[in-house]
Amino acid sequence: MKLNRACLLGLILIFTCKITFAQSSEFSSEEFRVPDEAVTENLPAPPTNIEAKDKKNDDGTSIIISWSKSVDDDDGANNVTGYNILRKSSEGDFETITESPIETGKTDYTDDTVERGIIYSYLVQAINASGATADSEATSVEATASWFHTGKKWLFLSVVLFSVVVIYSIYHATRSGKDIFIRRIPGLEAVDEAIGRATEMGRSILYIVGLGGVSNVATIASMNILSQVARRTANYETALRVPCSDPIVMNVVREMVKTAYLDEGHPDAYHEEDIFFLTESQFAYAAGVDGIMLREKPAAVFLQGTFFAESLILAETGNSVGAIQIAGTDKEHQLPFFIAACDYTLIGEELYAASAYLSREPMLLGSLKGQDYGKLMIFGAIVVGIILELLGINWMTTFFDRVSN
Image 1 (spheres, rainbow, N blue to C red):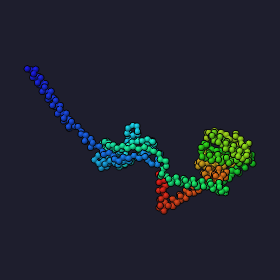
Image 2 (cartoon, one colour):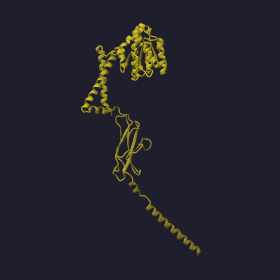
Image 3 (spheres, rainbow, N blue to C red):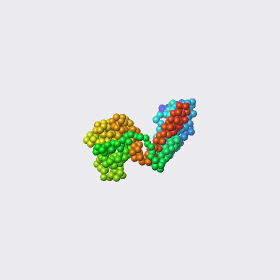
Image 4 (cartoon, rainbow, N blue to C red):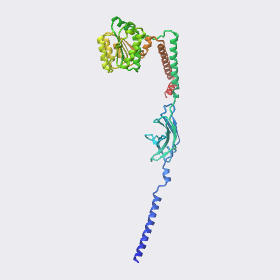
């Protein structure tokens, strides 16, 4: 009898626990579970009309992404606080490429980190204050390089016009047979005087091509001048000494001087050992050249090319031995030293014009004349632009702004 009562009490207890657990589960699911509709309502509206375009007039490393802003941007229920740009290539997943969210109201972004020939997919992600995000639809594009920058067509036409002027000047100089006028350059007119003095005194000529390499423009101009000087020393049979600071420059100079002596009909007067390598060290080179000046006391010294802090040391030493010195460099910081210590100094582009001036070669003279005409046109454009600006007409200023962009 007692056993039956115990079983009955046990069954009642189990039944009561099940009812209580069921009520508890129903209460928690209804009261504490957040409905899916509530989560969706916290999301901002996604951006729309996303479009990715290859940037025009570039080298194929930029893509422009544009979109229509979210309806929650500024005045929506879940205000958007910024946008992220996500990108993926053909392999991989979408990754955020913006370091920080793009400010609201903006509807474009330029991706400058792409590689040409690869197809990229983009999507724009809207972010609200709570950190919830909403993604736009994805769009794809391939970055390609442009053959021409259409915004610089006027610059291209200007280059074509300048080239036509130069080519016409060369044609006119070679066909007319007339002597082309070039203004007098005292330093170049003194070349024959310096060589003649060295010949009369029976002393050598020292030609210094500077410290520039064979690809340096001033060094190339210096070697062109040396070629003309060598032609004159070949006729006068005057010793020409050329210490070099670059072994490649030395070999080029040897060939140029040898060719000049051969063209003048005095190949036997050429001595290869007179063109030699000294050292690549700047001040060791200056000391070596100074030693040559003090020992040999050349009658003429040519300082043509690229020079640095050693310019004054060389010029002062040449001046102390009483040599006629003709200097020229494109380093404007060294020109005052040459002007103070040398007899003649080629300033600025006179160094580049020297080979045409000395050789009187029609093609070189025509090229030089054509460049002068081109510079004259540029100067005229500057004058016209200034006058227009003073009159309140800014057409030319805005024109060059368009060309630069």
